Length: 222
Figure 1: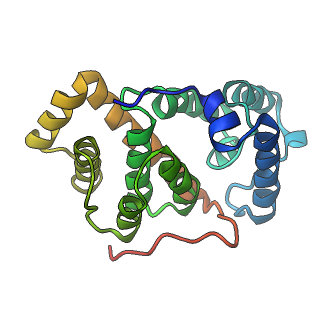
Figure 2: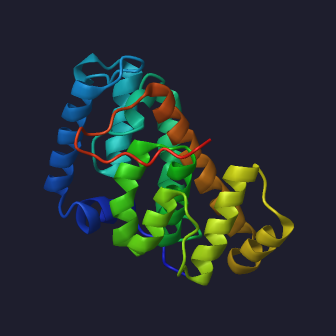
């Protein structure tokens, strides 16, 4: 099973390349989304933070090593929720029993289930870098059953897909997941689906914008 990894290592070296690049990317993302933020829950400029928002932002940077961006921007309208969501994500994204590669597969399934363009825009390249095959990710984007998945990927995909589509998991699918990942792994697998559903719901409710040149997920029949 892939080993979990630390968020600082992921952000500062594996994905962004350096702490300086991470900070620059975070600033660029902040500036872009200030300009394009939906009026429902506009991004709050740091100089306008309340004391609670400032503390939540400081805790975020201390934990993640990058400025607030993405779903955490609308969540800053309730800094307590933002802080708790960040804390939960620190574990589910970076230290779960599934490891990073499988967790990214779950995130793609969740983003597709909620047609959440920003979540997909961010995690599609991360998933590919983590080891998810492009053909598998593209099939999920198109709403197709992926082919060529590993046994672990097949278990995680089936569990997550059933959970989103049927609102429950069959006995057979649950048993496969429990046998492979144990009870803790099943809890973590369910937790990742639930956590990224929370973020997808917040982003959809806020009508959070993606960059103008970003590709949206195909709109599938309801």
